[in-house]
Length: 422
Image (tube, rainbow, N blue to C red; front, top):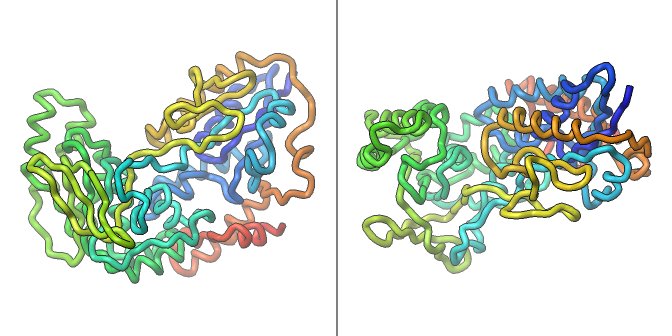
């Protein structure tokens, strides 16, 4: 029996599904020893730091990750960063294959004037801030204005807008970061616009997300009927199923009886951002619309127009993702997930994607290297193992239980390492 050592860089959905695919490929003649390397002290990637806290059902996939993690042939190396604590060449020399599953963590830019001024930020910063990502704990979010604008037409844009527009008391039973709940409860924002550059027939929202919007108990949700009627005409007599479902959900919102809450979430289509204005911070955004130029006063603008991969030394990049051929990068290096294909698909998409790439990896294996592992490279570096993570996980869950929350997340890196017992 041949045992091959595989290093997976990234403990998010793509990384765990790659490990699961390798576990499923094992047989009487082939086994794998899998080391999952994660730069944060906590695993689960976007399931922990990206999924909206008011959508807890999506997070139940973490139970699958834990089953994969405890299958007997997987070790977690948390708090270990590629390029800082280990480098790619070292991994390539010690492992039979290296799988990059690092996702896409950089928000794409609009490329317009004023984008860099205070009050303008990316969903790639705002989302991990309210999800207790250690890197964004101290991010300053200007919530002292009455109007915010979210630019984008996908589920991330909708999550961001919803978090700004809902009554913060609704977050009390969730695992939203403690610091974020405190800040949002002081927020003066009462009007949130979602501005999409194209018509609603081209939006990337999903219909389940749209159908949940009218359930917001303290927020008016506004879509303009003329926008949806125009989109239905543009979509034609036989639109794709997803487009039809979206437009049906949007029409239901547009035709619903108006509500009269203090907070409002309004969708504006065919609004192309041209410039962000302000002296020492954002004060208004200039849009191009079908009827001409339009200025909307706002003190906060958050862009949610996609993500790009953070470049890592030794890996080729093109158009915001790792350059690859069906998941193969070079020699014994492979890539899965968003780092491979860009920010597309849902969490489950990573499962089928990883399965195909891991079959390619397995078919390309030669003689096992048997040349040590990552422990040889880390010396006295504090490593979060699966046991350490389980201690963190239990501490968070225990803190949340008396308050009716699924958990209270620790957002400080040093605190997480201390709770782990290191």
